[in-house]
Length: 326
Image (cartoon, rainbow, N blue to C red; front, side):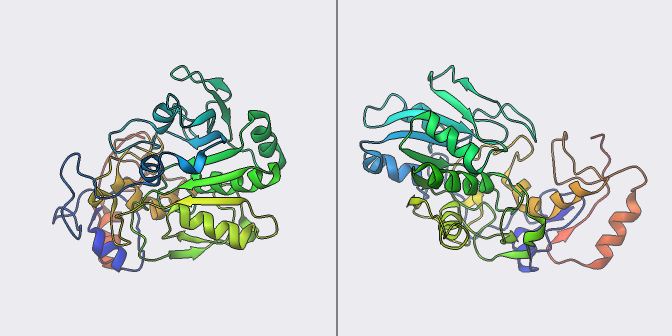
């Protein structure tokens, strides 16, 4: 499947189906990406650090993060804050795939001491409510900081780690700080169906659209005001600067670190909110290949499928036959 980003989103979210490669026009950014080392977007962490971590002063701090929690020069924020005397960093909390990112889908790294910093790392994966609140209490933190790159899709689990951690922090009486990062597929619109609460799981806790169109700070504000209103957390946000809602990730100048093992590029995020649906079938969505979620297939699917879906004429996307062993 070959795709044009602008055409794809202009089509009202037909984030399609089968196999994806670069568009024939070579991309559809509104403006060329900044040169190497030139990021016009300052993340929430960049702004927190520039302010001397004033928001964290006098607090024992724990951080919910993964390999995407980096600075513009690709240092991990935990490695940056740990030796800084202005921050009392005492714990790290790892989501699905783990803090350092060694686990595959459906796994985590468990409880261990980080060999780089010596900090205790606690596992949040598949924990929620009082059991997760108990983890926060046992860690001894006063403030929990969340900094993870999202992929823009309702069923990407990190936004529900955010939700669960906010709820648990409220139960434990902890303050919660969310550091902003871009939505990699723009924030121009919410697209696709809204979750039916009867089918709520860890890949969709609450009623948001399939491609939600928000950043993590916007999600946190929504969660706190609408879904956690009976027991809201003491929430602070640090928004990024320089980001426009029309920005795809590759125009920000920020480095991309795969948020999970099968999200290697921003283009993966572009198709993910549609093609991940095929995980609920007996088709492979390309896990284990170099283009996960851009390849879909199974025995018995051949060139006729590409011809059939091309005949539908979906704007912004084209399909091609591909052969792979998942």
